Length: 407
Ligand SMILES: *[C@@H]1O[C@H](CO)[C@@H](O)[C@H](O)[C@H]1NC(C)=O
Ligand SMILES: *[C@@H]1O[C@H](CO)[C@@H](O)[C@H](O)[C@H]1NC(C)=O
Ligand SMILES: *[C@@H]1O[C@H](CO)[C@@H](O)[C@H](O)[C@H]1NC(C)=O
Ligand SMILES: *[C@@H]1O[C@H](CO)[C@@H](O)[C@H](O)[C@H]1NC(C)=O
Image 1 (tube, protein in one colour):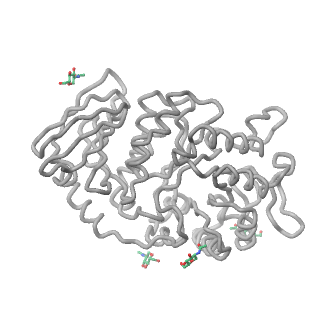
Image 2: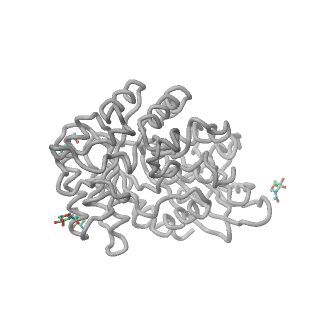
Image 3: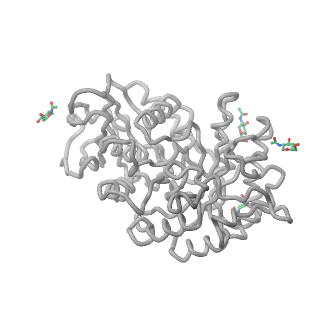
């Protein structure tokens, strides 16, 4: 428990200024094509899976019709591979004319007409990660082009950035260029991820320029990937947790729930822990074909309320005891979200007991509190007092998510 005291002090001291574009006051939510649809460009062979106008209009229809928009998933985002291989005669980026016959402007209108927002992708260097034209040398023009199309979010990748100086300069210049358009555009960066192998990122500075930023490798559709993201986050929490807040968030990458690689308990863990981490919630899955269970989890109002809590403080791991991890996240109204994660990958469910006095540096349940279980299923645990212990049963690789509210 010793780690909790200095961490709480650090959290109270944090007051880094965020990018002032008025957006991302809570972690942005939406859908992003990359993890599920990658760089599919062959629409003849795979008409429903290629990166195309059809993919995004179909996803927009489902988001508007099946409760996704109401649940908060607002940004429909294009990743790499949307562009034509060359710029137009005036140097502007353009969408691949075969796959996006109406262009991005028409797609943005379509998406806006359904009460959603559109995200797009570019890169700080000469080429994107998949080899499409990057924004180097065109930051202002590209920002103007995106704004003129009605784009609401830019994911700006860091491949082919040249040098650390050009990388940092490019991220700063695109942020200023977006600002100059006058359009509020969420700015999603990968700056610290590309910097980290060489240099300790200056998160105070990154938060002044970006609305969220990736720190670690791309998420894959596997438990190993989810596990490594959580472990990386816990190991670096002293430097990254305090910086997160309204307008600026650490981004552990997409939700892969609804795909192929996670068991039910692992999907519950991803949803619960992305809420604890105040993570942007971008699903990458096929909303046209998704199980009712995955939909229930992804649209769970109580989990989303934790993710979107207006206090905007990121949670952290308070203890790791054998294979159990206990995490907490301070919420508005003196409440806490608490997650018990069981990492053992053999055997069956196990009980984990902990004293409520451990939570919130002793303040979460002082003198008493109500405890509600949110995942894996909702259940009221009633009123407890400061000296109570809780025992929770957790499945291997699963998580129990609780909401503890002081009385
Ligand atoms: C541009 O930056 C200024 C100063 O930080 C801010 O007040 C303004 O709202 C920003 N505009 C946009 C569109 O981001
Ligand atoms: C992009 O290409 C130009 C021309 O070859 C070069 O001068 C510039 O340094 C490159 N930029 C990056 C970020 O590599
Ligand atoms: C980090 O960036 C901030 C804001 O730009 C600056 O004030 C501070 O000196 C930087 N810190 C370091 C260690 O370079
Ligand atoms: C966990 O504790 C509860 C309540 O004491 C008990 O009913 C249950 O059997 C225990 N589970 C395991 C796996 O020991």
